[in-house]
Length: 90
Image (tube, rainbow, N blue to C red):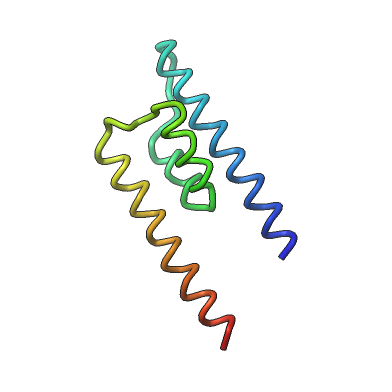
């Protein structure tokens, strides 16, 4: 359980920093991080860091397809977490 907690801290921090860095790249007209890679970070556990950075940095808030994909990942994670907890209780 401790390893999972440490993993989630690391991946959410990485996701937060990556989204922030991508916003900086956008403001400075530099080559960007692909949306796919940003979504992969959320998908492997960085959803909370992603949510915080999306609203803190106002990053990709006008990109409907990205926001839809991001929240689809978040909902899927919540559903999987719910069923994982139910299976663990049994």
